[in-house]
Length: 515
Image 1 (cartoon, rainbow, N blue to C red):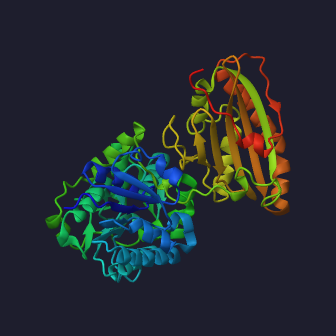
Image 2 (cartoon, helix red, strand yellow; image 1 turned 60 degrees about the vertical axis):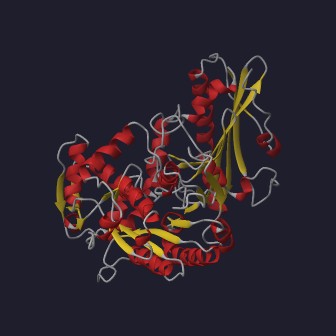
Image 3 (cartoon, rainbow, N blue to C red; image 1 turned 135 degrees about the horizontal axis):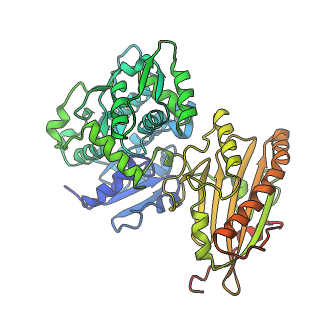
């Protein structure tokens, strides 16, 4: 077993990839983690490990994928465009798989390992999503490099999209009116077992070129899973009423409203629930020794990780981190259109390192320090309009990293003790950024700035901005005063408005953490 040549992991910031890389490192492998954002990769806890390389690349750009694959022994292909491309994911996945096939051939890899979906490819009700998953596997296996295909059903683990759907539905709804698919049999698998199979295929040459079903020891219906989750979570038994009238689209819309998973992701998942997803062959169990975790234990482990804030990765991590180009420092004021701004600042007692935890802890269960009812109303309206709403929460109550989802924001840039930049992902007629900045002052004091930038889309965008502007002013002033109170600053400190020109907003002086 060659441990010197690195293993390329595409989709390293995704749910499975983010957990696979540290397991490879623990096993003594060298890893090459590939993602579209180097900053997002660099925030992972394993990013500074001596045996890992971080490379920027997009699987849709062949040259970047070829370069990333050079010198590697094998590639683990964990890319899925369902979150980033939504309705166009099948086309994007097809293009990406062909690029992976070409890159593997040119780099002379020994093996490709791909995690696909479980389900009969010849089933008359095969969904578009599962058909796409099977197509990707077929494309990879047409390479001269042997490709191993692992096909899994529902993955049980904290942060899995399908597990999050189950969790929120059971916790929020004591009575459920469900489609008939609650009686469909499935064979879930714990995320730890998925990772063990992926690594095991690297270590067993007999798996090369094969297609294998992977699943846990239990075959259950979704109704069984609902009852099992309620039992493990200490909830009363849920009342389930199956009806024939609920279509996948209606189910996806309901999931969108009740859970953090948006309808664009919920729809292909719910369509797939109509098909039995159980293992048809068990050859992998003779080739790769894995201590299979039953559903009850897998749910128990996932709940423990959620309650202790130890969720390693989440479906929300996936997708490109692309701050709008107009927000780049140094751009002209008119670049991309007229940028509308609202900016307030306040001077606080204490150095930046004392203020920073209050910025890093914003959102989630703590809220926004002021006007939380208005924030919740905005989140509810966003959810009804098809947006992400506030229900996504945050990964950890106090720790943030670039790429994290934070309610209906995304962390796009962060310099601890200095700056936190959030990109809005709610539904609105334009693009918005919220910038929180800390500037050190004399006598161990700090200036806290809160800057909102908005690029309107058409007349509707301008109307939207000016209608909400008074609420922004009220919220910003209230939030700044509330943070001042939290930090123990004098009660007579008042926020003031200022004009944030580009140089002032971008060129912040360095923080002296020894002051």
